[in-house]
Image (tube, each protein chain N blue to C red):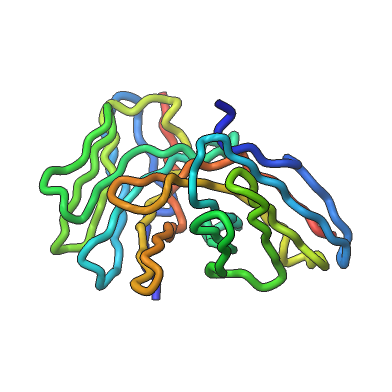
Length: 118
Length: 114
């Protein structure tokens, strides 16, 4: 079963506008974490923002905010005031735990390609 | 700090050849990971090492082996490369587990198997 679903293969936004990238997740764990990573055309993976399942407030990091709706199991990334340099692939990921070992690893969605136009 | 480094950056192999992808981190992280990234598939975990001396299979381990050589280094070996292993390979590391831990990624290795 898909654990992380990103339904938007591509998104377009004009510079200076806000954009929301969708992410829904599936887990039966009570404690989990949600991450967003950016992958520019150069290929590296850049951590953007983190939301823990017990965090009461939505996470924010500069122009990035995470719209966390626990009951709906969604963790959408909002980028305010888009810039040309925001054009990239964006991946949502969930920290998944192993109850036996306690070890946790990330499970990634398939990504959304964002294109910011002047 | 260099963060996570990977060698080589690019590699072309013929079917049946073997090679080892190297990864090292200088952040004193306990956990390390190998992912592959294919178009339309996102990143998939191949193997991980929770701590020095331990390794475990991820989502897609077939055709690969790993070695956690020490705390810094985690290598991925393809014993007999197949065209299906053409992909971009990322190594990552993290301090461990717990709230807010993030994985730091290397620059990737682009592997083509002909």
